[in-house]
Length: 449
Image (tube, rainbow, N blue to C red):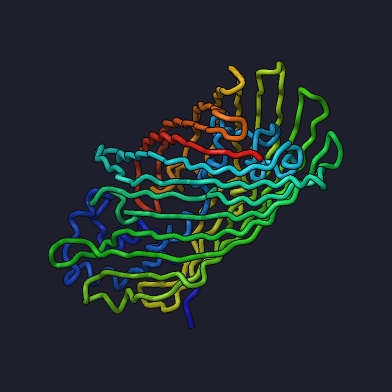
């Protein structure tokens, strides 16, 4: 029968095994596994090595929620709930899609160039990322039947949760994370109905295909002083919905209200692959594990305003229900004295984001856009992690649309964010400051017919 008990925190494991070690930099003084390291680990219950195997599924705008679902909207601070711009309304507000005048196909990609630096308190030691470029994408197809003028049918595929982050060898937090690759693709067939000239309603059924690969070192040494390593990988399928209501009372004003449901991602056949010395191989067996984690519900309210013909303004307020992520639990197929099932507190809380943008039509062929987004983090300093060093932050954006011919247009955007976040994470024994700089250019193509 598998054990179902609580285990010491990650930092307490360090102290059980090496009571004289008081900060993460001094972990490099560990001795080989065949001496006291082996004895200490046999006594410690190290199931918390898996603390982050699933946490990557939780969100990038606060956490790992990636707000790259439309080039026009991205250039306007990712606001689009109350202002209809293009086929990306399938994501931003399905209720507005029936107000589109033409059928369209829209495809876009937004490469993410991000760098993270961690500076440890006291020692001032520094660790950096050397992450590859990640490429969130979005695809929308909207069909407006001529005989069903009040209806719009669509299909969307987009990546609202995902990231690739990799830290340099030997960095201070290598026992928490060395590399994380997360991908999640949402597929959303959608129906929208124009109730009247002022009201529209719509909804889509969401299927999420998620994959994760996480790697980190373990505080167990080989004879050559290199560290043991673990790689966690798995796949998960989740189901949910995206609902929207659109209201346009006048030519100048429009309003939107949307709700994206929580998705419960269940990983049933995750793989744990250990690279450890032969002396402890029986304590860290390769095998399967299961777990579950919710992707948060999101409710948005948006306002669109068209004061003059050339100018459009948009304001969005997003509520993100991260409170659902209060516990991280794992059930391992094979338990040992050093590998137990675990139930660990995460204590995320609900949070908000505020987005504002403007679009100005310079000439018939060219629109220019600017935007700003302000977001609050879902985690306190005690729960900041290397893969989600999010913060209270401001992101600036800009972009344009160019129409070389009537039916075809090119959209482009760029987002810039720079912020810092303090960490007092006792689970990982990481005390210091994360500094993050991110630049996200994007380009999209749209064909109307």
